[in-house]
Image 1 (spheres, rainbow, N blue to C red):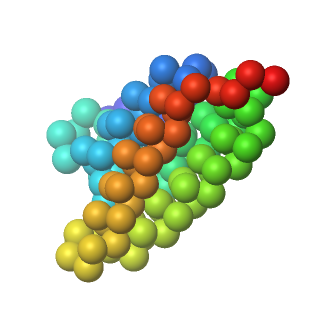
Image 2: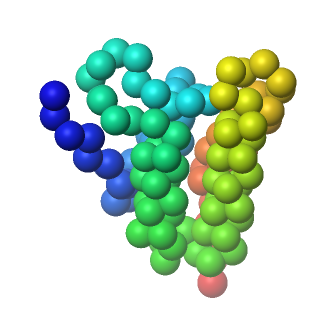
Length: 110
């Protein structure tokens, strides 16, 4: 079995892809196919938050801080509802969509 190696996004397109893929893995992010052993909530949010940090300059400070806040809230929702039964996981998935919308919004000209 190979060791899991996180894939940290290096550009905004990769970040969008990661966030979009989170919809499928939520709320636990445990890979059920066996292709990505070691993938879980911890590794997924590591990838997301490190990707945000890497892209901080491209995102702009306000957008970066908002996305980081959304990431932290999303993680809390998924941790609170790992069995997808209380409605918190749905709130987490709603945040995924909100994050994607925020990434699509035009960056203000400075």
